[in-house]
Image (cartoon, rainbow, N blue to C red; front, top):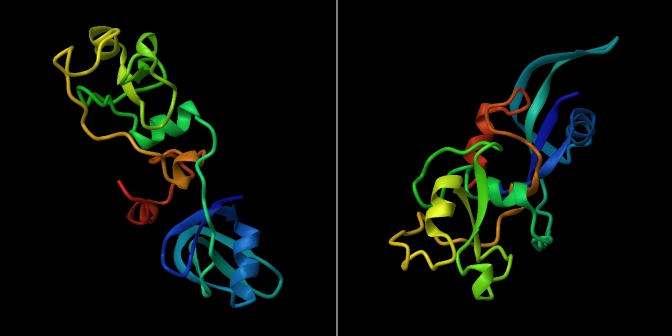
Amino acid sequence: MKRVLLLNADWSPLHFITDMRAIVLLYRHKADQVSLWDDVIKSPTTTMQLPATIRLVKYVNKRWQAPRFKRRALFNRDGWTCQYCSDKLTWKNITIDHIKPKSLGGKTTWQNCVAACNHCNKKKANQWPEEAGMSLLKKPAVPQSYHFWNITVGSDEWHDEWAQFFQK
């Protein structure tokens, strides 16, 4: 079973659905096909390529609120990159840095936390970035809904055409 990216009518990503759900939406003319997987599905009467991306015909008003703080979503938001030195990170060397240190009353919030490598986190220690002579690559913000999706760019379940629908 392959994942299918479901886009709203305005081309914004909504979430991932199963390939069978995507086929039903296409069959009922509730969605249009945007891109395809190389995989083929066969039935006694037809053969078709599996959709990779579909777009709803009618706009769905979906209000989204960021759920509680999650490590993986923070790392996805920051692109698995140290927000001080821009090194690429993995589970082995990634840490969460509090911009306003916890020892000074800093909270674990989306706006106060960034992904950092072990080296930079130790260098900054219990100081503000300016005090440690460091600066952030970008201002931290509440992540988008897709940062919470459990999918990795470049994995077997990632379709190359999806990148254009996700903001950097």
